[in-house]
Image 1 (cartoon, rainbow, N blue to C red):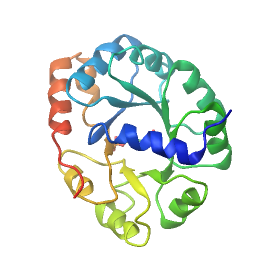
Image 2: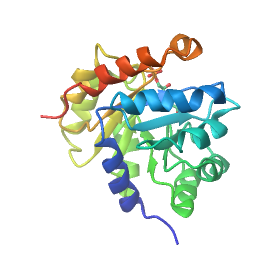
Image 3: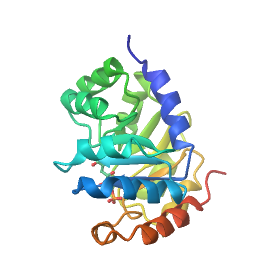
Image 4: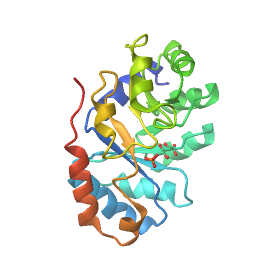
Length: 217
Ligand SMILES: O=C(O)C(=O)C[C@H](O)[C@H](O)COP(=O)(O)O
């Protein structure tokens, strides 16, 4: 069995439709995983991306996957081994900064729906040719921000994006108002200092604020 690119994109679209923002999480301490996920979900952000950038990341995914109402994604997927480890830890979707044929094949084989990254029209077209029409625009701000994504959308309206990288409360609306944007990713809803202080109430407030952002036109 394997998951086709088209079916993966359909599932990813559903996940990206749950809320305007997908928190991008860099978690060092597995003890913070559950209360952090609970705060974000309670604030209205059910789709979460845990980056595989810390030694604790896989354990964090397993702990967060138990939180009711959450949809756990693994970010920073780079190699096929990352895909297998993320799937085994309990991730239900994957996110990658870019895409390689090996990574796409591993996700299809492991049946882990992937939100693959693209920063240019050519990268987006290559993924579209392989069946992926819901992509991460990364690094969003550094790649020209909302004006660049709007320009890409003119000739490629069939591709929908989740811009990530430099997105914040102040610029999120500029992306979310574009017709080719379904949601955006960002780390600002779970800042390192608030996680370290275990200030879950403050993180829930940030999540609620982000969940109230407008979307689409
Ligand atoms: O590691 C990954 O796979 C990533 O997805 C990179 C993240 O998307 C950005 O690092 C988030 O960017 P900020 O919201 O600007 O902090």
